[in-house]
Image 1 (cartoon, helix red, strand yellow):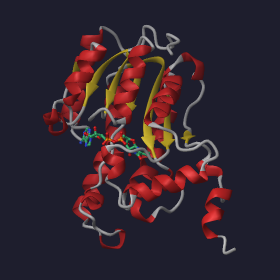
Image 2 (spheres, rainbow, N blue to C red; image 1 turned 90 degrees about the horizontal axis):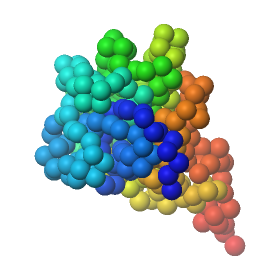
Image 3 (cartoon, rainbow, N blue to C red; image 1 turned 90 degrees about the vertical axis):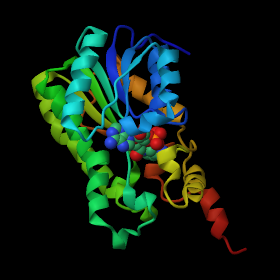
Length: 271
Ligand SMILES: NC(=O)c1ccc[n+]([C@@H]2O[C@H](COP(=O)([O-])OP(=O)(O)OC[C@H]3O[C@@H](n4cnc5c(N)ncnc54)[C@H](O)[C@@H]3O)[C@@H](O)[C@H]2O)c1
């Protein structure tokens, strides 16, 4: 269903790797709602070539950029404004990576070079993206910037490893930068805290299947899908949410406010 919510709006979407990616679904929905955008991902992630299909389907151009590299981000923002012929109305940061998680390193035995790299990619990159947009005055007034996060920033999920700390940092950046973006440019900045979702990044977390099944049983509305996340993001990019800023917004079927559900209790009953 399309409501033309983003007619005339222009932006940049980071992080569409394959059709499971939350950013991929978001790009499809933004397109359906009349928005135009540039797609970007790390050059190394583009070798798979799948992003070309998405670009074709949505009539978008692709500009590679490593989100930790300021020069590449500057090029991305400048070229995007040239291609789209205007300043930007929305930006989606949908980026995450932990080498400690990928290599199965325990939280109590991290390799700190990997910790630093994961932090740079997953958290500091959000500051780098916003600083580039801010300094280039690339956002239109009442624009909207969204990054994706997970509840391990607030509560303990042991296998989420150093990504929990990265997400806490990311959410803090949204508030801190969101203040300046709001005051100086009338731009809103929020994070969406999404249910576990079967994507490349999600499935990289140890015990992901158990994790997903547990969250499904705990959440009164069940887990939010990638499409649900795309739809929420569309709402946050639209003019219907103009004064929502500095927030961490849960899109998780109610999981974050649950103590226990009857379904989960059922698993532990003795009789
Ligand atoms: N899948 C989940 O369970 C889940 C839950 C909550 C939040 N999230 C968050 O959603 C976001 C998107 O992840 P996803 O689940 O769609 O997985 P995904 O693997 O499809 O997307 C992650 C993206 O990050 C990109 N990336 C990695 N390093 C980069 C770099 N240096 N520069 C630019 N891009 C880089 C990857 O190429 C990939 O496209 C992430 O922030 C993730 O933490 C995911």
